[in-house]
Image (cartoon, rainbow, N blue to C red; front, side, top):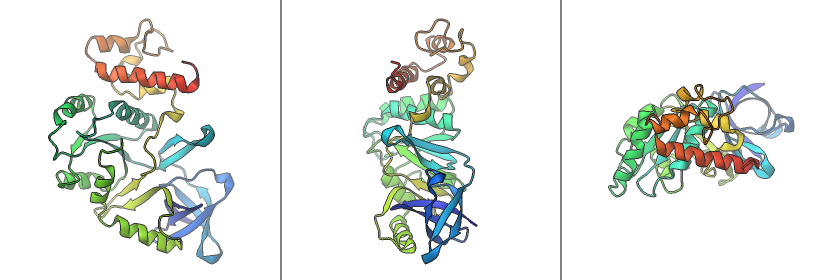
Length: 296
């Protein structure tokens, strides 16, 4: 069997790239389950120049999202980093930002923040305060403008040698930044379709692109939210990195860090060690989890 990298879903098949850069359209055995873009696989050649994926090699990381009928679907595998994007316009959804960051903490994927649309002055002041809160708890932030190119050289350097993904609410400029990082994206998509023998516009989920400066970028335009699908309340709290030094000091092991007696996290909020706004958003996400599980 041959080794390969899954770079796209094409119709009901997979585009698998060999170490030499050849792309083969492959199908999978049902028993394998869901294969994600970014998976490293073993495959065997079949008739018609196609292949069959026989094995998914162990994953370092995987991001998931809710699927149909409560099934969990993988978004991307073997990611090294997720960059969460915000912008002055539209007004940042900090609750969504916290959800992304908590999921990344849970999955063991380092996350950083990108402040896009740096060329806009309207709304910038409202963004900088919360951004400083994230910097204080150890999140790296980058200031860029996909429109003018400000900050792109530094970002391209940081992306080198890693497999990354951009995430963010609608309107923050994720597509514009992706196009700025991948100036030949449309050409790459056409080449992918031609090599696989299928027509264009057959890519249904994420696609992995090789960045010109080195590194890979998984573009997942159809997935707005990855999420809380596999997280419980205790794991959500651990996903707030500034909670972690205090959780062990809570009076009870099953503390939800809400109205619980002897909660060290709440005490840290009251003493100014934990950002009150972040804590309030944690409570909202906790309620969201409870509503999903029917325990609220």
